[in-house]
Image (cartoon, rainbow, N blue to C red; front, side):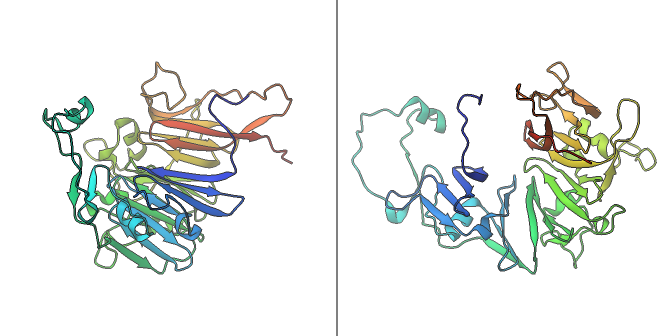
Length: 360
């Protein structure tokens, strides 16, 4: 029995930000984008090149990056509006009105604005229904060429990271948060240009195979081909419960924290202190992390204000990895279930469950 309000659709991917939603429909092998707040004489539903929208991300600073596999090009836009205008949408923010579309209309001078309108402007006699601005003509964007086979493009709070099919990890963004870049900044490798992370190029257990980042966090994570977990980021922007991931007594500063600018390995231990091997999936939220082992066990760390760790409401945070107690119900059908993957929203965690596979 499905929860109320849910349904199954022929859909593979849904990405949503602001008033714009992108849906990848498997049956048609097409991306469909539905944009809000467009002029009435334009069609709000249109098809978009799947090579553009298959890999894209929006950072917390408002920048948007997209990847086109045909041209091997990453394009970064200053705002979502720039991206949509570049795709041909007549997109504008709420309460904006372009000067060339300004229509004079008589308004009842005796009409008082609603309480919502007054609250929005914090002014009792609010009558400015729209902000009249010139129609934007220039698109603020920058393109980076020579990046074939990008399989992941993700955003964090101040920049982006990309993963190639060969395991190369590229980062770029705000140079004030060099920890999120995971590399040194130089004239040859500026912060604003996608550059490889050297420490992730020759890992003991193989190249990177998966990235996990939250657009609202300063923590980045990757898994290697040998299922080892590495993280990097800016601990100063993280809660104390996640700062412990960067702490190493052998290299700790006088303040008790190691603000390492490069990726560091993460070791998960069970209740007996034994190291847990085989991390097959990882997900990063705003202030928490969730990891899945090859034994189907789920470990979590970080804040639990919204119950995102699955450890009960009485626990507000954990500073060490904790195993989540789970019992997968087969629904009475006799088919055993197992966790296939994990995912995280800013303040939530998700387990993707399927039928248990038979192993030799």
